[in-house]
Length: 368
Image 1 (tube, rainbow, N blue to C red):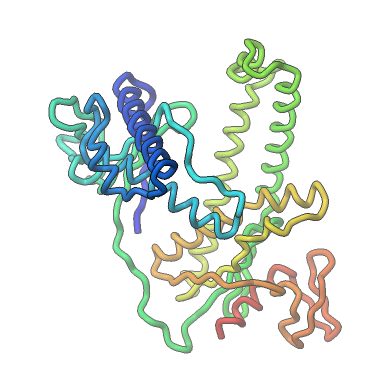
Image 2 (image 1 turned 60 degrees about the vertical axis):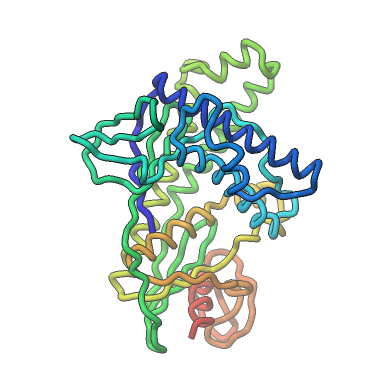
């Protein structure tokens, strides 16, 4: 498992040069790969393209950084293959890059006298950064929308538990739109309130709509269109793009805090296995009305699942995905299926509970 430390770098000529070299190399790899596919019908291996392109034309990058550029292209291909299994409209990577992220492996990373030294190969000036932490095993430099950002990765020990017995403590997590996550364990239900998160998403949608209306009145690519995009002030208010960026950070912060609190609570309760309801294909069949479809397609269930997974594994818990079909409809007491109306689940047998809590209870029951 890896932990990431981020550091803002600003913009400099050296950073631009490195990013441009990586973008040029990525574009060459992409063009030659698809050219061979088109003319020969062969899918090249990463080792072949690493041999063809040991570095960018100007030899600006470290040899292993050049290899990482090739590997990033094949990582995109792998991601496309996986997504194609659930999304037939997924497209492979075909777009060239003028700039691209730069990666350094352990062989090019050193910490010397309080500075992080990232080698760019023999004869090239290394990238030197003030550093007050340990030596990372892997470093990436990319663009965050306004400036370059350094992402340093640290490997932490895998603390996954041994095989649990029959009496191992199991908790289930039901992901949703109104409440990002609801967990049930040992007769206790824990709910991550989604009111603040939904209010931020609603305001985000309003600002995006306002910006879209302003842009719709301008010809795309015109001076006024560019001025509206780049301006720090729009109609006497703070730039809409800056507001949207701020809201994005707030949404990420809220989700991180809620998932951290949830996982910490389960860990304090002695949970060994976390079972997460699998709703990765929920968007494929969503066709209700305009507002409902928007909410479903904007659910952060993928991010919530990822955050809960790595935070739980970091604390030594095992994470399992479980199909949650009908979990919010089936009564945990009598087994009868009832489609709930509102936030409270009511069954003819007299059982009443929070509908998301019912989903989590039934997910736990599948592991017993």
